[in-house]
Picture 1 (cartoon, one colour):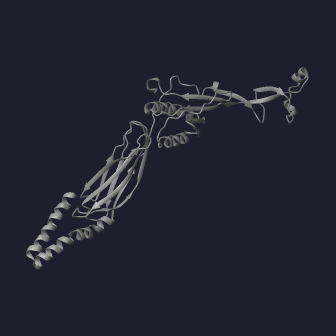
Picture 2 (tube, helix red, strand yellow; picture 1 turned 30 degrees about the horizontal axis):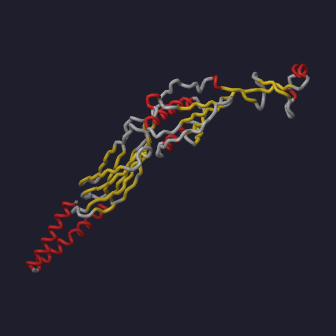
Picture 3 (tube, one colour; picture 1 turned 90 degrees about the horizontal axis):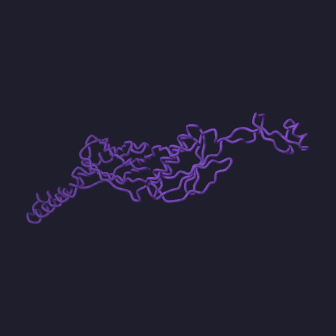
Length: 317
């Protein structure tokens, strides 16, 4: 565009010089024509400009290391295409990049075109693309005019599952407990002193006679311990990736067995009840800048099983 403007400027100066030194009607017509060229060019280009559109498409979530692509689509509904499309794209990994990166795209003399962007999927995070500006040039290439633009694409690079060593037995029968059964009978039961309101048919008469005090046989039922997965947040990317990959493995096992769990990360909690909840958590977590933060301490108890996820030894900060 700069070259064309310089060329036009030189032509305009020549027309002015011709009019000054020649001073005839023909030189005035030449000057007026050269002066009006930008306006004529814009008017001729206007139908194409009004029907031109730039849009971003694509961007589905992927596992780390898997290929993905984002498409920039430009289209003109007029039979004469614009001379030049000029589009500026802004993109960044919201989890890792403090500032967005920019890329300029120029497309020449076409009615429609697709430009492919290949995101870096080797690092975790949500990668966001947006059109910062979209313009087309008039047919002389002197003026760039804004056109319609749409589409903000965001794709999340998800962690691959990595088994912790050793693998905790979160789903085994040993992780089950007994709790009072509110209604009905059970083979499992617990003996305790009588409390007001207990049903008469729950009284253990033989033991009551021996103890000389009412003893109740309270029905019990099996229940799973509350499972809490705890992870610290790290400034070190490799350590955070290691933790998230192990978390992905544990979450997949629990979700496959339809076991809800509490996730504690830093000072925050998230209740995960199924694969959908976990994927929503990952998208939210990976769309914010990471920062170091120790998880809230949680103690295991008779009804709670806590597993703290640590980075693998070779990547611990």
